[in-house]
Image (cartoon, rainbow, N blue to C red; front, side, top):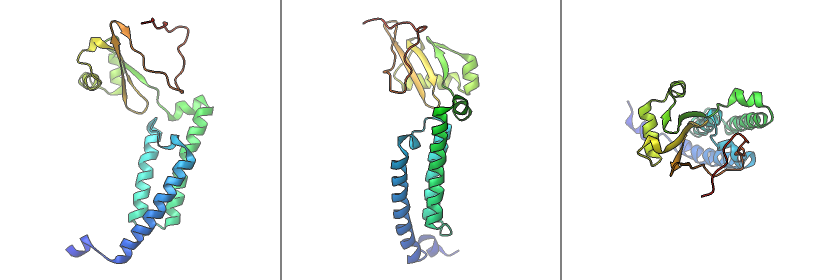
Length: 186
């Protein structure tokens, strides 16, 4: 085994990495800016897969000399284009959205874990307790709800003085329906 080749092979490899890496990085940044914020949002499993695939593709372009810069840029463009198409059709078709996106799961309501939901989400009670502690509560009774979001993160909504504390609405947040109780003025 030649130890010197593990550390350094030749200048051409270093120069190629610098040139191709700089160009590929610049092209990726430009493509991500052009495709919009959603490309790296990680809102669901498909978005996460695209993010990981982009990193893996950039790595392959940088380190694999058999991949030409043009081929690598086409691969990056393809991934971004496919992600854009999935997001485009998800917004326009409820059926398509359900096909590629998972729905959030309610795991706990009013301090009570929901066993069927925990089993389906493959979350143990000890993991649920850990999530609650991570979000600043030591007591299940202080939790209005725990939701496993589509992106795999957890949302913990705490109660204060017996009142449910709701998160601030965002632009993508649906307004409460008539069936939802009106919040009390505090």
